[in-house]
Length: 258
Length: 139
Image 1 (cartoon, each protein chain N blue to C red):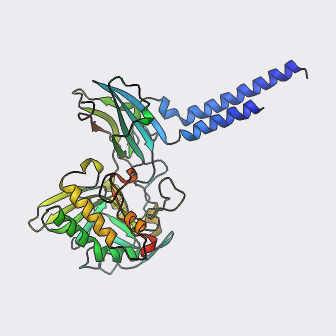
Image 2: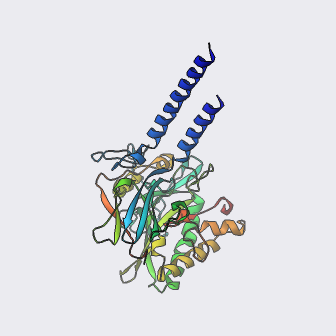
Image 3: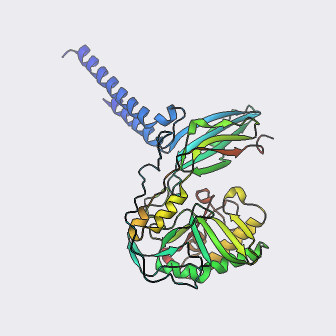
């Protein structure tokens, strides 16, 4: 093979690989180049979930003969299930008799959540007390009940930007988007945890609630861990924060807590 | 072949670096410019995309990456290229799809144990406009 032929062959190979790489890049970046497409890649006509998602709850479990445990703040259904990384219990966010109710991403529609049994105990022991204290510090009427708009409890996933499991994977976290407080007169006070609403009485409620929750953590947790759990939200708030949680409170029960 | 290896490596690096950025669009304002970026950021159940707003006032030639995100919203789905200035100039609108919270809440009542950790909310079919209020910028 002459030098010239060898050069031509190499040039052709280089160009071919460059075109392959360019095609690859174009495919990867096609949403950037496109105009008017959904980020998920779905069409306007499709009922599209998040990529790779799908709700397939399967058959409903048999109705439990035992009623929910009444008289507690969080209504916990009897029985413990095995989750991916430990045990879990079901929080019935719809129990009308419970003081703390809640639902995924809704102010009115309730649902169930799954949490670690020890976290359930901790929530029942301290959560509503912290809500009451925060409401008092914010000069709200004393709440009688609260509905939590949340973004999920148990989710088997890694923490953001990390290869470690999230506290959600251990059923040790609830992402609280809004507290909807009901006082004795039936009046409703909504407290958003979005940085956009971080002003006035909301600041007092938010800071007081986080401080209170932090103080419920046992001494087995180091100071840094205790601050993280209340967490961690609005940059500039009393306990600090980061922009990963600037639109919800990641209320967690860390491994150090038991 | 060194040049070839370097070329492929550079291509792959660029491809990897672009994975979280889904799309972006610049919008001209009365006295400046806004950049609306859509990123895929995991960690918020049922809201895998985050739309970020950056604003550049006047004719400043500042690097966008050096400007802070002044507002953001996590959404179920979004059309990154639909960002535009509203007719009254007070908002930047962008088409989004909200999460179907009602269906997800119903699903949580029928699922327990480990299976509940794999439930993922779906997006509603209908689109709606999300508004970033921009009145407070460039004043």
